[in-house]
Length: 391
Image 1 (cartoon, rainbow, N blue to C red):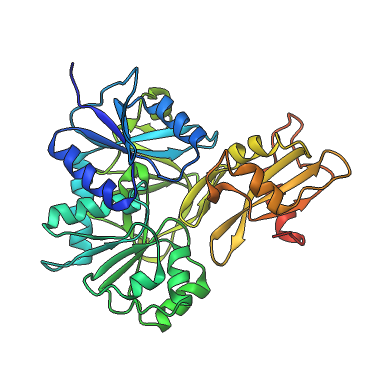
Image 2: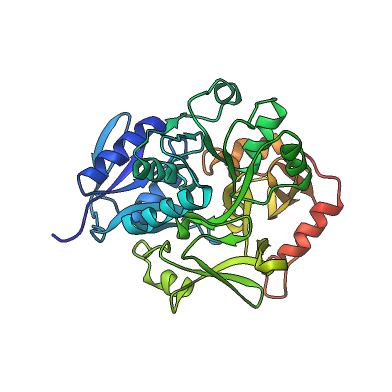
């Protein structure tokens, strides 16, 4: 049988890091899965990705219908599309190595510098730290969860990668990040006030832009890393370079939609500023980026609409200082009883990851839709941002 085995790993960060390294040494590929994902999401991911087996703290379960990956594949990283159906981004060892070397060159890292990994390794922003450390011959310091006190006590590292939400929490907690030679910030736009506070605290921020499909960040402070190219087509960002994914796992149809003539067609809007610097303006599709996590608005809507007290619902991202965007929902009640935010969150918990649940809700009489019934996403956002919102 040709190709490499794909092994799903559902472990806390430290165990996940150890097993990924062992799989790579054995010539296998890893599919990282967040240990706290609800079971329905895990099952959907396994059905789509078709790994050989899944491992967690309870043991190893072999799965029927496993399909091997090309031998050059290192990772299949889960990501969500606008439908909420999970996609697996196939990343090769060569692409990950290019990304790691490009990071080191741009950051001008010195021998022996160590990374602190406090983000989930089930996301490329966390897991790529393993690749950079492996290439540099250093051992990263890995935290199983984000803990400001633990980060404040950490003295062995000089590089750290964060998303806006975690950076703001660390600044609020008074953690001294000025000792880091670089604090990478990505996953979503950083509010101007948070950037000002970071500057006042003497933090060397490096703003990164990229996607899971590009092995993470491939643009620092608006300037492409060596070998990466960017262009705008009708204000939408397209990217090419040696860090691009091979494609989406077992989905040639989706792959051909976004990879055309060597260019990755993103759903991000942008513009080119003075000096050719890229400015990212936000998403052009139905994906909300909250705290560095991607949320499919239609996926949340589909589950909300099964609530017995919800007749209709629509979801959008609204500007939020802490989260970048907060998931918010318009809800049309089924009858006189109006569900509360707490009840909505409790209902969604068995079906969706916590970060996908609305942080705010607004009760309305109707949902803005087109004549064909499609949610008018911008209209939903406008209503949410102009109104008093519960949450």
